[in-house]
Image (cartoon, rainbow, N blue to C red; front, side, top):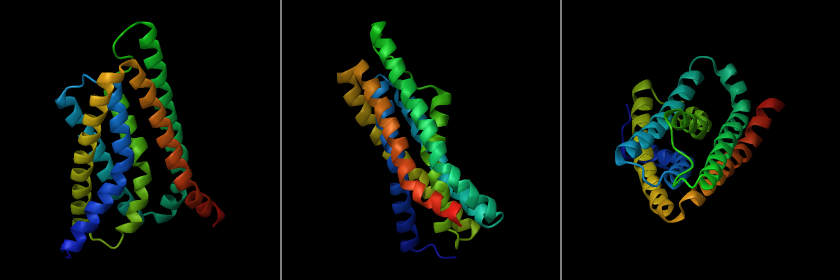
Length: 203
């Protein structure tokens, strides 16, 4: 079993790459709830870390079991991410505008359901990482997933802190900005994954 420096470096780089969308969403969450407690921040970062670790493992399992169905599911990935993040972003903008009209300090609140939906939406494209680690045995795959989770947690905590700091100055306008960020992330995931999805359809 290879647990060399190269293995951990690859896992860390995978974690950094996968965490970028979650980082942006974390900034958006911090913007929308500038008075967020550190315990809640840790919960959000932990949720993102969990999903970013779980998706590659699911992808790895699918490759070693029912690869044909996994290939077809890849076609749906960009659409799922776009729909979920566009809906979340639109809701965030609506809540921020409504809060502004009601003169409430924060129009949008980050709920448990919202966190779970964001976690799925930002990590679903990580299923394809299962191909990257397909030559790993199950122990290596689990260790890689743990490294990805830790890296994602740290990066998302940084994102939440940045967003919270900026959100304290922007108040309700931060919710609008956060919603726009979510929609843009959905578009980015959609555009970056669409060519691969079309390739699968073509085959």
